[in-house]
Structures are given as C-alpha cells and as structure tokens.
Amino acid sequence: MGIIFFSSVIIFVLVGLKQSGITCQLAGYSINVPPSVSVQEGLCVTIPCKFTADHRNTFSNSFGYWRLEPPDSYYIVASNDKSRPGRKPNFYLTGNADSGDCSLTIIDVRKEDNGTYYFRFEERKTSKVKYGFNNDALTTIIVTDLTEEPVISDPGTVIAGINKTLTCTPPGTCAATSLVIQWQKSNVAGVWENSSTVTFTPSLSDHKENITCQMRNSNGKTTEKTIVLHVYSSPSDKEDSNDSPSNNEDSNVCTVRAVDSTIIIGIVIGNIAAFILINVASYFFLKRHMEKRQLGNASPDSKAQDTESTYQELSGQKTDIYYNLKAQ
Image (cartoon, rainbow, N blue to C red; front, side, top):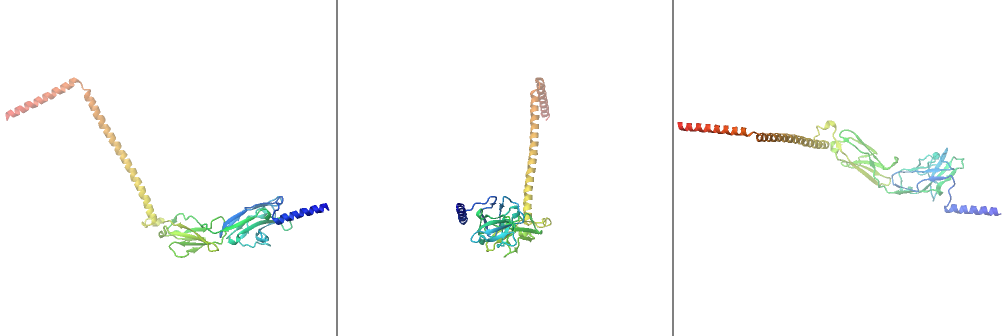
C-alpha cells in the first residue's frame, strides 16, 4: 500500500507540472532556436534551428513538424511529412531533419503569421524517439509594417545605344517572395514595366534621368528606390555629339589636362630663362672683377709711361691746332 500511495503522489505531481507548463527537458533532447524573430510584412525570413534527440543529431527517414502553439498546438504549419503537410503555404521546413536541422523559412510574411510556434521531431513512424520541443523552446514571430527599400543593381557605366539590364530585388537573403516589383521612368507616366528585371536601350537624352523600382506587398503597402542614370556616348557618337553630357564631361577633363600642361611648360621655360640670366650675370660680374684686379696689379713705370705718352699725344694735337689756326 505504501508503494502504491507513493507512486500515486509522483504521478499527481507530474500531471500538475505538465498542466502548469513547467516540465523538465528529457535528457538527450535539446534544441537551439531564437526565442523571437521580427520580420517586415511582405518580406521573408529564415529561422535557424538545430536539435538533438536521444543524444543524437543524425537520423534516417525522420520527420519534422513546425506547429502553432495554443490555442491549437496540433496545427501543423510546415513539415516534410507528405501525409501530414503544413497548412500554411508560405511556411517551409527548409532544414534537413535527418541531420538535426529544423530551420524554418517563411516567405511573403503576412500579419496573420504573428504567433508562437514550436518544433516536433519523430524518428520514423515506428520509432519511439519522438519529442515536441514546445516545453523547451518556443519561437515567437513578430510581423511589422514594410519600411525597407528594394535593392537595385548598380547600373555602372551606361552607354548610349547599348542595351542595359537592371535588377530589382527585395532586401534580405530570401529569393522567394510574392512582392510586386514595378519599374518607372520619371519622364514616362504610369508603370513602365512589371518585372524584377528590366532591359532598355539608353539614349543621351536619358542622362541624369530618374528610374524607380517600387515594391508592393499583398496589403498594398509600397516602398521604392530611385537611382539616377549617367549615360555616356558610345565611341562612334563621341565626335558627332559635341553637346552630349559625356562629351561635355570629356571636354572638361581635356581642359583640365591642357591647363595642367600649360602650367608645367611655363614653369620649365621660366626655370630655363632664370638659369640663363643667372649665368650671363655671373659671367659679366666675374669679367669686370678680373679687369679691376688686373688694373690694380699694374706697375708704377707702366702707369708713368702711359701718362707720358698721353701727354705727348695731347701736346701734338695742341701744336697741330695752333698751326692750322695760324695758316688761316
């Protein structure tokens, strides 16, 4: 009787804990998943998830189920079990349960996807290894309004007359989405084209033209991204299109280069002229200095002879002038 009473007490306590949501995790069963994930409406998200069961993370022919927590914990939103498919078409079990991967991907997230979810694992239909991780790790998905802009591929160098393809994609890493992508040019009324990519042939008149990619979710909320086209003339048009934006830019570059060359040439010529003037001035200065030194070193006799010869020459000139006057 004592043993029966003790067993009844244990069962009663366990049932009470189960009903109150306080249950200990079984040994060998664990899961690693974020407790909450925030995603904007219309975008997509992948929730990373890893688990072990029965001390293992490698299995064969196993099944994984993502379920909605109360009020209906048996509501399967995604699974790899074809006999029990998920009831949310935008929820996908992208992880491989055989390798302990329970990752969940949600595309085109909607406001009604707000909620708390958990993962359940079953190793084959006949195996006893089965466990729901709702008592260990719940994940809450929070859906917010769409605010992020789409992403436009860099147009790079756009050449007039040559086709150019631009790609517009939603932000994030998920490729699958039901968002509507629309292209529009600022000089064209209405929608230009509905596609994630657009191909066009730019002309010089499209230079500095705005091109916009608009993204719209299922509730009609839109965000957009605008870029400015920079169109350059093709090589065959450069000589003929003197008024094209690209030619104007090229002429500005050439003008800057010409100014730079003129400045360099002027500096070189100025340096050469200065060098010549300095050398000529130095030459005359040295010549004059040498002449002064030579005069200073002359002997007294030579100075006297020079003075006497000069006196005789002047006296002779005086005599000649006297006789000429007398003859007159």
